[in-house]
Image (cartoon, rainbow over all chains, first blue to last red; front, side, top):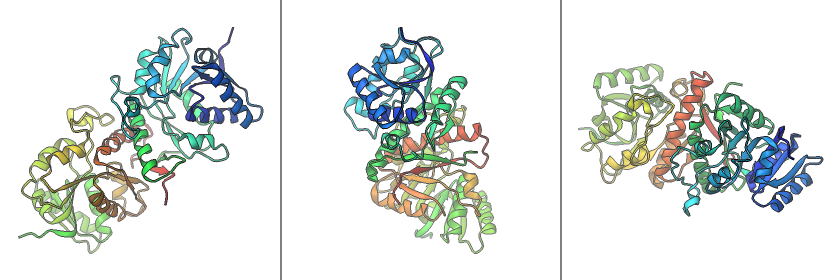
Length: 228
Length: 228
């Protein structure tokens, strides 16, 4: 029987570029990481990759539902079009008090169009879609949309990004603490979950800038005027 | 008979906080500025204020249509709900080849709600609304939405913001040159005009952050990873 660990961080879709980047950063900060995937063998391979790069890391691989049962905070790092099916598949695995972190962006790639445009989400944003599907008592928080995967994976270098975190106060503050595990990241209180729509849309603009300016390592942003 | 000056910059709504801030910055950079307002006396007063702060500035005040006739580049710095009526009122004053700069944001204040939320614009953004109403041959470019008025007006200090400029290539590049007149501003090629929707929405998020973090001078952003 698996046990929920309040110190562990589950990353569903942790085999993708951005999920793997977060796994590396959290493992490097000494936190237990539970990588989830639809296929256990892919999660096991990703966990092995992280352990190879971060000596002594407590990183394991699981099917999504099993990873979810093992960590209080569960980060959804799946493509937008897999978000709703993934959350629906976790109904039995999620327990009240857990925090679901939405980092998805409704890029128009979901409908075969390009990543510099978005599709409209009935609920207002990917994060609100997640919240609408999460079981009662599970908190949804929006974060990490604008941190480029390449910079996350490049452990020797700082990512030089601010992360805007939106959601209810208590779970939002938990996720803001997570952000601070990544060197140089500033966690910014983005207010209510509905503000995720601004942050998600910004990703599509940043992707366009990255292409236009030929910056393969990705672009991020820093707020100016933010009090220390 | 007024003559169009390719060096001059018209700022309609130049009596408001942000328009006045731009007028000060462009005047300080030595450019002729034509401040427009619905009421000529308010424009005259704003022009006098700028001349009082920038020695030797070539700044004059006019009704909106007259200011429009005097400058190749016309910046719309009016509240969102005045945007469509203002552009409709300029049909006779605008000539092909002129550039209309949209800096409006569809804040929900337009419908009596708060400035941390936006209203949906049928055309996609305030900038595309402007483009839909501009006479044939007039170019619409989106810029300056995210530069706080207080920082613009504080001439001794750098504004420390990036400005994302969207629109067709030739007029966009003209407006990017304008941005560079403001010390420390970086002009960023934001691609097609439709991308204005991302930049406009970001303003509502920044306003919320400004309130939440109690930063009366306003917050902006810098992209990280932008090539020099």
